[in-house]
Length: 281
Image 1: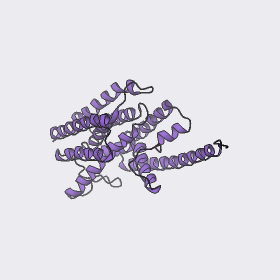
Image 2: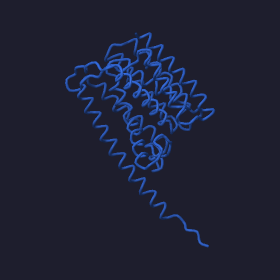
Image 3: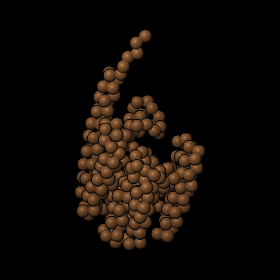
Image 4: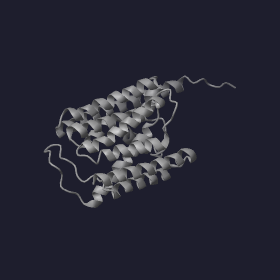
């Protein structure tokens, strides 16, 4: 089963990499990108990469087996969400690369030392090596940019790695919590404002922090620390209840941060509008 899943990971990742190259050259719209993501996620499902069940954080017992349609739907949504999260995260030099490196490190430690899945742990270890090798060229000021081929591949790989080992979805949720919540926030905000939910803008957290005067390095390093801190919480205890509490704390902290950022950016725009010079005839 591990070999079959590995083939699915390689095939899906290769497909996204090739599609990303075409996307970077021809700049496809949102629909072709989502179709490509659905195809890649479908490849994963065909090769037995499926979320079969969760563990109840209160009892520690696995949930009853769900119907196949539900498990496949959850898997497609999970992988699509992860691909879009990393793709939208790739807005500052080294941001997506470094965060994915942190995620790969946490998944590796969790697999190798907590679950004793040595063979599975080689996959996040390989991803960690790839991202660390690329990061010096992608960190600010970047000499090489990732593009869609890199961001879609990384999101797909992180999503798959969260499935193929026990209890690693919770680890990925804690490590990638800030970027994931940012995606949810942007979709809700755009729908509320009557905008296209998948159309890019400068509403993401990293752009808002940049507009407030923080440097790219400060923002990127802050993301690294935040993701590493909550990822480490998933490693210090085996208690699923503790992980759930940590996840709820993170959601609260990030939610409050989103509100504060929104208000500060709104006030900043109002001040700029009030100080705009008026044209005299």
